[in-house]
Image (cartoon, rainbow, N blue to C red):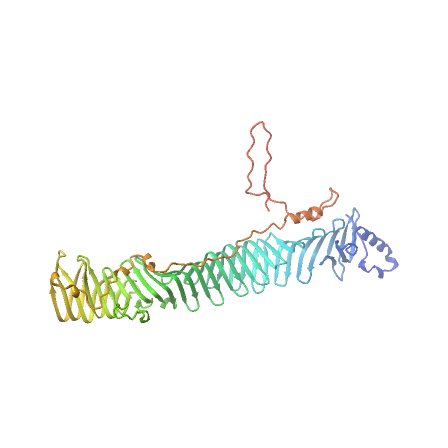
Length: 615
């Protein structure tokens, strides 16, 4: 094909001399074939070209080239385009732009590429080769991009990358940019890389002005010291905080937090969770449960309430602690657990109850404390004290300390301070209780079973003495300076030290009003016999209803009915001519889920296959 050249700078025709008349005449002929937007506001205007040539075989096609001073320049309804070379199809009002192509829409959107097509009828642009689209908040780069000016949307279906200074870089296989709302919608293999973290997901809606990101499907956000997983979430990339739902969890260095709904603030190293919460401490083999929790990483603290439960996991028998509120503070090597307001303990062979429980994981000391402010003050009511049950024994006192071996995780010893009282029900009598009381109690455990007990100072005892056939011999009631008890299987050996007085009294001679020592308070009905019993006195649980984030709205087809109608209407009247506006429109793919009709029976006309089109 041979192209005839026209004059350089043809828009400045008035300055040409008579020797250029032949080029001017040629220019007029081009203008007749190629009317501009000056004559019709809906058509493309050619603002500048260094050289122009008509195709001698098709007068509708004109090629424009730049000169040494500037590029070929076009405008159309608010958009401007520059390039080194352009081919213009007049009847279809369609341009193909080559080399160093720049497109500008208003003051906010700029695009550059190696090659661009643009239809003045459909207002659809197609760019290929090192495509860069910039707007005030972000820069998009890809190898292929569609830009629909009617819908003000840009779309790519080959890997694209969006860079935003404060949010980092986002890559995906498919992407859409909605210019009116300044929203990107990324689909498939989405990765957001930020200096502080990396986000991986399958679907992400991102608003460039606010920096808000909406996450859909299985997703992870991995930072230097934490990892977040969710299947629905929101993250503010400017302020570094987010909300997460649906199998949401946060992994810290040594803690994992799970819950129905979670909040995370990266700047404060703070996380909170609501409903069905589990916090796992991997270093101290502890699990905390409840329905509201807060985690302050910098302070190494966890706060949990609403049916709060702490589980110390042991090889054979875990310890369960329940209260209104549980707090865990301190680094892993010196962690402290505090349970307060109606705290309770349960283990297969141990149970307890107190206003508050304080456990030091470094020393292995667990303190059970009752608070004076909760006493009724009634002189005729037994004073509220912490209580501990081990096998058949009940122990009470003003304060109880349980000491565990931190290496073996077994109970080592027991201390009861002030008003120590040990009661064991005599199961062979109708209403008999063996009782020992004194100022203090010291106990030793062997294999988590109470082996010896020493009652120190002002010791008193009522003991049901039986023979080897479990026949009641008499009831021992004595006083002494201290008492030592040794538990051997089903037997108890009592040793009274510095005995003051005492006697063995036959059962039928022992008065009923003398069978209980002063301060006797049997609380067997309060003893939890299972993990579920820890919650039996709790008020009904009323959990907040989580409204949650909105569900994902599937990405509508970029090549929708409206766009396809515009492309169809842009077709030339001559059916033999190629519709330039349609040359980059992808063919619709058949729906892989469509069912085919069964094969016809012999001797009957064959049915055509039917396939559903994929949006």
